[in-house]
Image 1 (cartoon, one colour):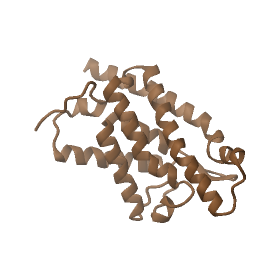
Image 2 (cartoon, rainbow, N blue to C red):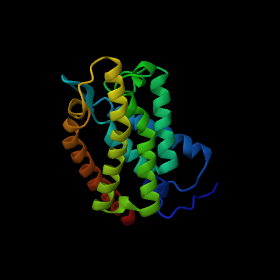
Image 3 (cartoon, rainbow, N blue to C red):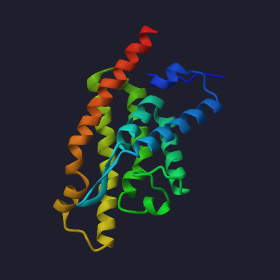
Image 4 (spheres, one colour):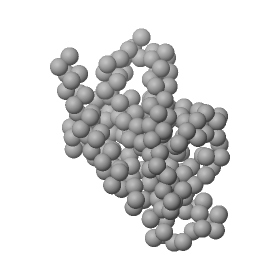
Length: 201
């Protein structure tokens, strides 16, 4: 067994510091299951194929709690589970067709976003403070849109439904900003408090 040398150790790794294959597999699987549970919170919107879900909060929390490497692997496992047909995507759906659909860009960006947030935690310890956690969560959200919106635009073009940049933003960005801010604030309240509780232990 060995411990990892990082500038700042993510929350879960500080609780379970001994690095073993069994630990890494268990944490990656737990992270993928957390995202799958959060995906059950799904609210379809009539004007867009992109639903409101709890996934993004879980994705970014997994990245922050597990770190860049395990966070990335946990979300790769999540995508693999969905591609195999397990009902882990929004609304309890699964299958490769979901990844190739209009929300596929957001799904494929999940490992990248989790990895980014984990990297920010490991390099700068952003999860120790409210403002730091908020910044990390917003950066992760920005990456999701950076990948998800062009994919959605390409899908809409292929379906003959692309109505311009304004329509794209109305379908894939603007309705989700308030919820993303609320979720980022929730994470910014949760993670520093978890660190304080761990410190008291």
